[in-house]
Length: 259
Image 1 (cartoon, rainbow, N blue to C red):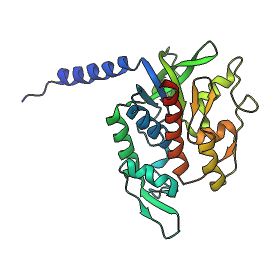
Image 2: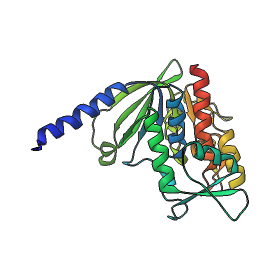
Image 3: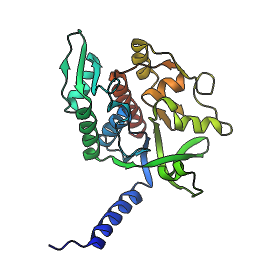
Image 4: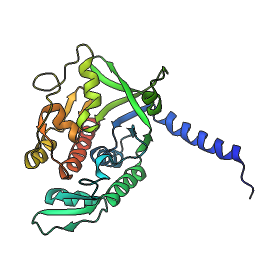
């Protein structure tokens, strides 16, 4: 078979634009492809929601790839082990009781594959430039290529519509921060603004990551480290149980609203 460079190009273009066109109207848009975003996408797609994930970088996985200080092992606690096992990620008991480890590369690739096969669409290399708000409720995202953002070129973005949005952007809490900047910009936090992230405290952070997984603005949910940055809680360091459980909780909360 003689390969045709134009046929190759046409196949890529047609496939991508068919995928992008189908994602212009969603049930849930997830911003950020870290562990909580991937897990949320898996459970949302499995639950029948039309969901797409938008990631600024070329690869999904967030901080999970590097484990702790580039030692590519992740640590989880007992209450998150069942979740990884459901996702077919192997875990090994640590010598320290109650702790388990998993290979970070296996974890990222397996969870991402499970989420995509369940029906989640992934758009990498895309940044969120703004949000769409109608009647004091988030109703969509304004998107552009990350390369446009990085080079500072003046290129107008496009918009998508979504019934719900999950801010899974980690420490930066990018989507909630965009809303906070605009008028009136009042979040569903105690102060109405981002409460900010506190010093590292793993035990408290793991608990609060799940506890703070909730609606931060009408239609906008936070998951993962964005929860503690939004509602005020410490960072947890290189342990990922709370991140994974947060993603599942965010999906459950949204599925309850769409039932």
